[in-house]
Image (cartoon, rainbow over all chains, first blue to last red; front, side, top):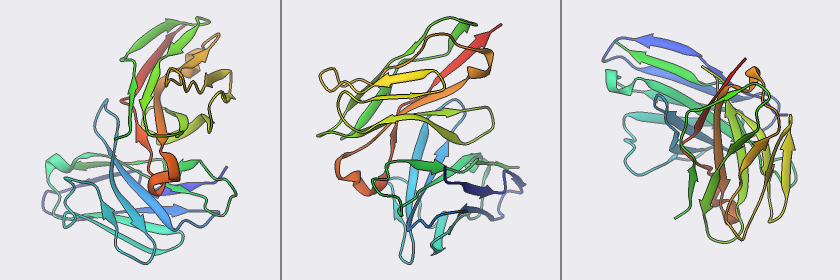
Length: 118
Length: 114
């Protein structure tokens, strides 16, 4: 199947700094990628839909100025957590669909990024 | 709106036991249904899927049948292994894809003991 690579897999940062997480589709193009957040022992919460060449669509309650999303190419979306605080510590996961596949119904997920803000 | 409800975990089984993880959904029309598995510290992997009523998805000994009449997509495996220990998520994608968004259930943690 298609591969989605997420980097870094783990990051520890100081409170007040910003952290960038990259999500790449390695062998397919994706005009749309999705960013999820997962709290310990909980389900995935969709944060935003990243659209190539246009602004991201944020879910209700997600701060757009806090979680900056850039989808500059058909294979790369980035999530920047700005002025991170300990409550931003979480597991962030991206996903993308191979839109070149007929009748695609499958989303491929990155391996996730464990963010710890100290 | 669309939603997915899974049975609560954790589920603890002995090796070779039969597994059922219940999943029911609420959606307009005929969504596509999925089961994803998440191993500790990792992202999600698609386990199986079904895109229309009465379809059966299967993979690695796991099966789930899309039941429109009961709005269910229960996951089953006849004989679990220790390596099946993970968190399992039921998910749906709505009619007309709704931008491709997946709606997830709360996840069910499975622990298989030798």
